[in-house]
Image 1 (cartoon, rainbow, N blue to C red):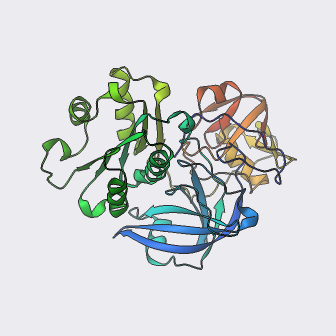
Image 2 (spheres, rainbow, N blue to C red; image 1 turned 60 degrees about the vertical axis):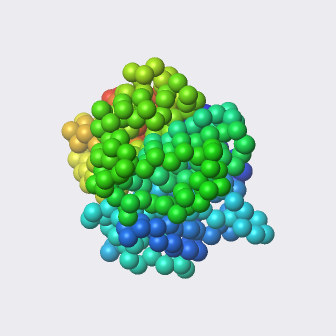
Image 3 (cartoon, rainbow, N blue to C red; image 1 turned 90 degrees about the vertical axis):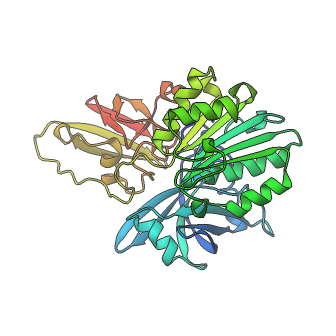
Length: 387
């Protein structure tokens, strides 16, 4: 999940209109599933109908994501998924949005989505978030490269479709790695897109467990193979912008090698779909506050209401964990420092962040933190989700 370069927007009123791409406080609303389309044996595309009165709240840019919230077996499950289609009106002001869900081994939500989810289900869907899309308006006529693994293709589908349709001179190269052909999500969609833009879309499928004609496209993408690809297939000197989406190891490798090749950091955008940490359905950790125990005093501003909670020093709990005891509506999705949904601004006091895959340096300078990864270091702490 995301991490990138979109200036923060201030939305003080829930009724205020949201421009697509604005970084506003996430809110859940219930939407109806209008379609479930099989992509592979282990992946489906889920489409939600967005009524006209909620169209502004769900306006988005390609590259953004939504979080889904359901109750399964008595457990609240939250999962974040990138939007896989460009925004498009349906009729009478209504719109739709689509995500792709790939089964994770042991994954509660992803398994349910493959076996039980059908049109007509109503699911809580968070308003679109993320800045993996930033800078698109400056890419007219550019050569854009996307590197994706597995379900990391989902934001690339929306990005490629949008960029190629917006300009007759923009080129998009996609390097997409999977285990085998049967695992390739959106295989037919990619083929259709290639037919539509034969000279401006270049597809490189790398399969780790299936032999390709070209050796460079066979096997796992390790450092040696990536360097070979950048020497022979995708020359960094010809690329204007890079989009990376996949597991941490692949994204980190690509960033490191691209930096060594002299690619400026500001032209490399990345999104992680997992960090390998605890699953998102895990609820807040139980913490007991005992009388006389040394504690931090945390004040939480959310939807114009201020709430205060004590957090024992010895508990070493996150700001989000403490906030959920008094504000169960505090926004979060991944709880792993990846998606940025729990972003808030420190108005008073200080924290340390364990991980940060979702905030830009300029956001941190302005006092924004990921509350799921932040731990108080001052006796009093004031955080604001509304700014």
